[in-house]
Amino acid sequence: MNRKTLVLPTVAGLLAPVLVACGGSAGAGKGNGAIVIGTTDRFEETTDAPAPFDPAAAYDISAWNVLHSTFQTLLRLPRSGATPVGDAAERCSFGDRKNEQFRCTLRSGLKFSNGHALTAEDVKFSIERARTINFDNGPVGLLSNIDKVETPSELEIVFSLKTPDATFPQKLATPAAAIVDSESYSKNELNNGFKVVGSGPYTVKTDEKDGRVVKAVFTKNSNYQGSVELQNDKFEMRFYDDSKSMEKALKSGDIDIMNRTLSPEQLARMAGASGNGVKLLEAPGQEISFLAFNTEDPTVKNKAVRQAMAQLIDRQALARDDYQRTNDPLYSLVPSGITGHQNSFSNKYGDPSVDKARSILRAANITTPVPLTLTYTDDHYGEATGKAFKTLQKQLNDSQLFSAKIQGVKWADFRPEAAKGKYAVYGMGWFPDFPDPDNFVAPFFGKDNFLRSPYQNTKITSQLIPDSRETSQRESAAKFFQQAQDIVADDVPVLPLWQGKQYVAARESVTGAEWALNSASEMQPWELARGV
Image (cartoon, rainbow, N blue to C red; front, top):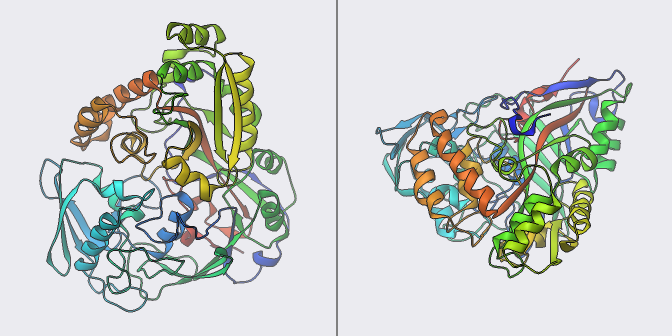
């Protein structure tokens, strides 16, 4: 495969079966009970994350899977495709040609799950609340370009933006803009715990133990009025400590479907299995994995160190050996299948080379071996993460240019500590907030970036991103993101590793599994139902 021309089809929310195995169903696969979804995600209250299901704080794919089912946004991603459609809003559009004013009209008669009326004032309250709380590690950056929100009537909302932004409709389709009940949520404080009051297609009730959710039951919200068409009245989420026990539950019929997180070994085994009544579905994905750097840390402050790592790391080996080809090597922040993608790291560094890495370090007068600690989370991105970091450690140390150590940290501690700059080099994953190249560039740079990285590049933040957002035709914006990718490849504030594929494993008795994930890799549980 020529990695410089690697192209994957754009994800449209449709998964294709790679295996359909024949066999009976049992347990959850029988009757008309709730669809049961298995996951290894963890939801727990901590000091740094006291409100896992509050839209002002939640900012990861697992929590957003819950929020999409329980809250409404003005717009949402459709069953497939990347152009948002109305949900709480009957219609929305830009009110000017410069993409600086966005107007929405609500559906009439909207209600929250508690019976309270949902009006334009609740929308305004929700946006202003998220910005007022300004939670660390939260999604407020997606709303930072809003100058003011006005409500000319109970059904009308007008957003005035600080600068033009053609991606604003997509941002309104994320849980960052979820509509909360102004009578149930404090304007200045997070709603601690797991209680949810929304107007989405489902309500949720959780069972908790020691501050951690052990089961969540989602029931059809009789007050919901929106564009989602429910294929079921109830579904459950059950939580497993590891993917092996989750796979066992699927095969025995205790659960109906699983998505997060399947190990490469499982996927290879399931693809070659037969006779267990399970189907495995695969599609191109937009999840990316990368190394992030605290560019103020003395160890990696000199970009020559980061460039040498980019020159040494063998992504092909990672994808082949540690992930068993369940992902693809990634040579840019913008993944294949997204407008504007180009393999900037491959174009700059070519094949892995110890000699070239040594030359980079010598030219910068860097003493070798460079001591380094690679930090990763051992309970969030799947069980293959630890194995992959051992490979990264070996690749660096075998060059004799680095003396690398690795450490695994629980996600509850890892995320806030990384944001505080505790780690020099650490592994991160990114699922897009929305499927546009902007969302693979803008969140990582600038003052309020998602990583809280000290790295800034004024050309990216003051020229390329603003220019791209004036362009409604996103194909025309590609040139701006291609320039940004080249800058990132040269400065290496982050180092892309791999691009994931999407997998869902489901009982044969479940219909709609091919629509289980949308174009942002988010779960669409309302598509699932019982077959014959």
